Length: 357
Ligand SMILES: Nc1ncnc2c1ncn2[C@@H]1O[C@H](COP(=O)(O)OP(=O)(O)OP(=O)(O)O)[C@@H](O)[C@H]1O
Ligand SMILES: [Mg+2]
Image: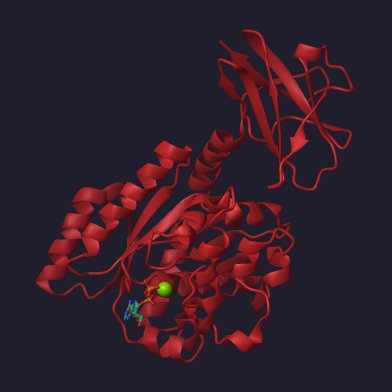
């Protein structure tokens, strides 16, 4: 599953147009798609013709309670393409969670608890670096930053890159950026020089597809359908089909490498001078224990405790050296899903390894 946020604090640069049309184009490639409207303006919801009277649960509920999951809150746009809608109530999240711990990982934890299986989850963000945007960024492993051809476009991309650096340094959360030239009419000289500048500064992160300026996007949104359905032969539809294919072609590269990396950073064994901290994400398990070379592989092992966010954790004071271990999850012996360091065991499986220096 690839989780991609559409973010840029600059307003009106094409986040919602990209989120909605890309989601629809991916669905047409038979991908299972979830679009989360994470903006109190609710434009992504309106873009599919839904009004507030059409839903009682929304993105707001995913933030506020762990009892409501995506499977309870989505609206079906078409089979295999779901939307969690939003409305103005989402603007109350910041205040409602003001004193709550872990308020910036609410969306991520909710996504992890869900048993829905999607190929792509797209999250449309509001035009601000707010709690809503931080939640989307901490839930995703990739971000599409649409940049429109205005004089503040480049400055906004720079600001977004700073935000991503901050998340890497403070939270150990790595996000792969994709910069998208959006709403581009490539004829004026000013636009061409902006393109050259973007290529020079952000070459490796720049998506090849350009979304051109066309009035079809406004017409399609006004009719409550994406442009690929409204006018499948239009330039706009072609651009989003190309963008969807460009992303699909990157699939293996990004989803495996980047996701494994950040999941390991967040939940793999964390070695410190005080010992090793194990964290593992088995939200539906009833008991989780750890066993390994440090306790002679006793079947009973040592217990992990479940946190409120569904993550199990324990801290062990392990001696220097290499320690093989497995988790015992409701009786089943499993390697650590967040640790890629393993060694084969005598039963034809793999044990996880942690090295304390
Ligand atoms: N390629 C395009 N061609 C023509 N118009 C476009 C294009 N992309 C976006 N627009 C128009 O620009 C306006 C802003 O686009 P959009 O709502 O996607 O931006 P946004 O970044 O989501 O805005 P906000 O920051 O308010 O959430 C909309 O009216 C949309 O129809
Ligand atoms: Mg928007």
